[in-house]
Length: 259
Image 1 (cartoon, helix red, strand yellow):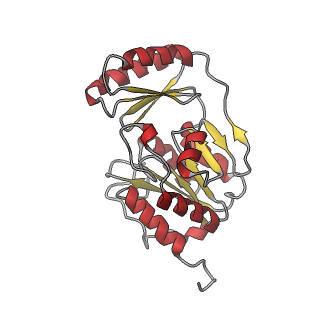
Image 2: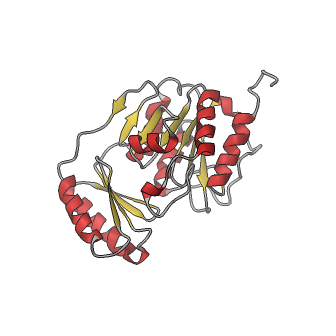
């Protein structure tokens, strides 16, 4: 059942355990990186990437990125700071030990790509992103085409036995398979995550699966951005607030160290 809004903010004294007892799961776009007009416009950022790398060290590796981007794109943007990454909303995954898990290419993606590209030619600002195992139709720069874009992706998904996944100014086609919540659950069964409490931080509708999985495991969800009906338990208002919170938390002395 969704929590009511407004949610309590982070940092909070509302029952969260200290960071060293948590496994931290972070979305990327809209959470660690500001949303841009084009996905290619997001690149490495020194402060963010240093904070993520320090969090990995502070939590003994218990940090994973759970993103709609490919694992390779996450590595590019974060300078390879995180070993454990789930890409394509959980469809592909690289464990903390470096094992890669991904399904075979869906046979109907090629036809769907051709249809999306033909549609993209009809309206300036539309962009088709080929993610290998999935396709994304971006309409942030063509808001007037949003309804038609969603309708096309919905039809293609039904015709090809694919799934439609909606996000912030994007509609994606992906094969059936794991979602962000499944990725969290899988990581929590593996070292070094097993035994800690999951804290999932995300902004988009696809992150609701991550919030659900975190709560099911006794953990917490943090919604980034404007309030809405959500399974998250806490909130942060923006990407800069996420980075500030992360900086404050990883700067705290570990319990019992006195420093």
